[in-house]
Amino acid sequence: MRQIVYRSFGGPEVLELVQGDKPVPESHEVLVRVHAAGVNPPDWKLRRGPYPPRWNTLPITPGFDVSGVVEAVGGYVGRFVPGDEVFGMLNFPLRANAYAEYVVARPRQFARKPARLSHVQAAALPMSGLTAWQGFEDSWDVRPGRRVLVHAAAGGVGHLVVQLAKLRGAYVIGTASAGKHDFVRRMGADEVVDYRAVDFASVVEPVDIVFDLAGGDYPERSIPLVKEGGAYLGAANISDETGARYTERGVRWRRFQVEPDHASLAELAEVLTPHVDRVFPLAEAAKAQEVMEAADFVGKLVLEV
Image 1: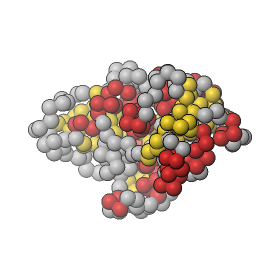
Image 2: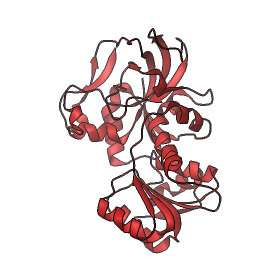
Image 3: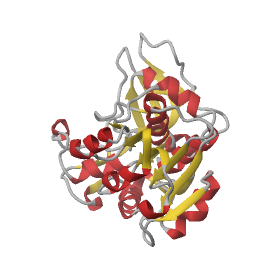
């Protein structure tokens, strides 16, 4: 089968298309013929260097998100049969080998693909959608009257957080560069702030929750904006020192990592629609990751396998 691998850590140029062995499912696994694979930030960040340590063994096939068709099932698998259309985020944060024509994984890491989504759309949804969904479900009650600030609102996770917060009746403010404002508004944002032109902390009125997908100094700069009793959710890094400052203000804070969850994936796939900016053939995985690193897109990037 065709698959993308890298034999050394580095830039996008280390990615190469090779022929590999088609995987064989164990008794507790399903074999899926991949139609499309999502491109996500961990794909290129892990390619840049051996983090975490369990990723040290090369060569590596990147990727976690797939959509495709079940081709074979192990003897103990009862959830799916060959021919079922499925999608999922596989094995994260362990290896999943998604940039390939075939993958194997445990069946509960897959959900049935809704008919309303194409394979390309479904492959764009798992990691980003679950990050948005789990962030809200595990940490904060988003409902009408809440004010939600979404940093990096035009990104893969951000545009889905905007959709989800709006669906739940919140007033949504997003930060994004000026050229992406129309897109963020189409996703449902009530306000959009150009973070390059103004200091968002000086123009945004107090909010109940910050969903931060930018990291850097954004956790620190967002402290004055969150009301007492509110929450800060950091899918990017936040230091313990900054977290302590939130606690002092009576604000709950949490850094979290997404995890596979087939039940939530099935639910969110019925209400969220990912925007796919560009689709690349599998052979152009290096170009797709280059575009992602440069943030020269809105929504999601997908490989069509």
